Length: 475
Image 1 (cartoon, one colour):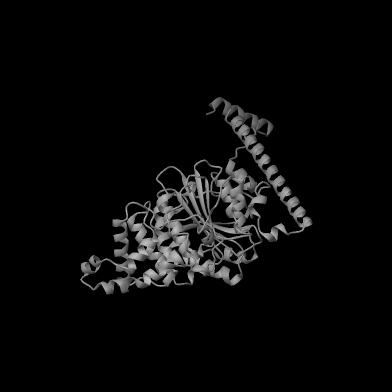
Image 2 (image 1 turned 90 degrees about the vertical axis):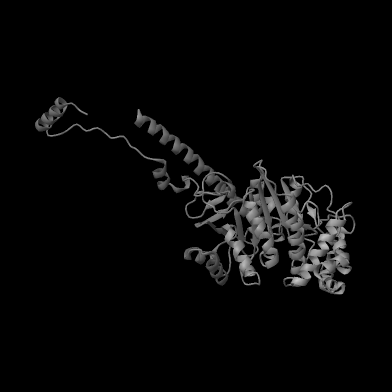
C-alpha cells in the first residue's frame, strides 16, 4: 500500500501540471485464452493420452482417442461401434488404430478377419509386417491337419461348453431349444465329460451319445429310452454338420497345439467361410467363447477384440447373448470390443433387436462414416445423435467421420502416415488408381502434414513465449 506522503505528492503534481504519471500494466494471459484465439493450438478435446486418430475438421485440433484412458471418466464402457458403407475409410481406420495401439507395450489385439481376396484375409499384410502368422480357419485345410478349435476344450468351463453347444444348435436351427431337446443335450454333455478322461472330448462323442443315450438317463427322468433318443435326434443332426458336413474338420477334434495367445496381434482369418452362410455366426460364437476362456486373463494387459462383419454376432439373439456376457466380463479385465458394421439396419431390424440394442448401449464410442440420407436419419434416431450430425453424415467424404464419444460429438478427419499407407490401403480400387491420382493425393497429404508441423512448431513457440511472459510478470 502506498504511503500518504506519496499520494499527496501525486495529487499536488496533478494539480500543478494537469497530468498524472502512469505505468504500463503487465499483460497477463492464460493458455486457455491463447488457445481460444488460435484453435489449432488447443489441447485435444478428449485429452492428450492415447493414439492419434487425426484432427477435428472444424477447429483443426488434433484428435486423440483411447478407451482405456477415457474409461471411468468420460466413458462408461470401453466398447466401440464403427458404421459406414464400403469405400469410406472404415478399414483404414481400424488398421491404423490397431497399429498405433500396438506401440504401447501393454496392448494386445485379436481380429476376426471376415473379409479378403486372393485367398487371404484383409489383415494378412499387417500380420506379415509384424512377423505373425494368421490363424486360418478353413474347412478344406482343416481336413489336412489345419487349425482346429474344440468347443469342448477343457480350458472352457463345463457351463461355458454347454452354453456354446446350445448356441451352435440354436443358430443353425433358427430358434431356441425346447425343454426336451435341451435336456437330451445336457445329459449327453454331462455323460461325455464324466466318462472321457484320457483325451479331450470332441463333438463326435456328443453326437454319438445323443444317438445312443444311456438307459440311466431315461431312468433319471422316469421316461422311456426311445423318448430320450427322439428328443436328441434333431440336436444330433445339427451337430453332425460340424462333424461330417460342410464345416467338418474345424471343430471336431482337439484344439490345435501351438496357437500363440501371447502375440501382440492375433488374427483369425475367416475369409474362406461364406459370409452369408449360417456358418459365419457359428464360427464367431465358437471363437468368441474359446477366447473368453483362454485369452482374457486377469493381468495388466489391455486387450482389443475387433470383429469385422460384426452383424453376424449382433443380429443373432443366441450369439449376441454370448457376447453380451463377454463384454460385461471384459470391462473388469481391460477388454475393448470393436464392432464393425456396414448398416445399423442390419442389426436393429432383425430377430435380435433386443440383444442388438443391449450391445449398442454398451458401445459408448460410435464412429459413423458416410451413409445415405435415410440411413443416416435411422442411425441418428437409434444412437441419439444431434440433428446437425445427422444432416452432415450424407455429405461426408472418404476418411471423414462423425465421432460420438459418450455425447462428445465431433467431425474428424482420419490421417494415415506414409509408413502405414501400403499396409492399410489394400483394396483393388486403391491399387488400380492412376499414378497421377496417387501423386496428387500424396502431394495434398504432404501439404497437410507440413501445415500440421508448422502449427505444432508455432504452438510450442507460443507456449514458450507465454511461459517467459508469465515469469517476467511474477518477477
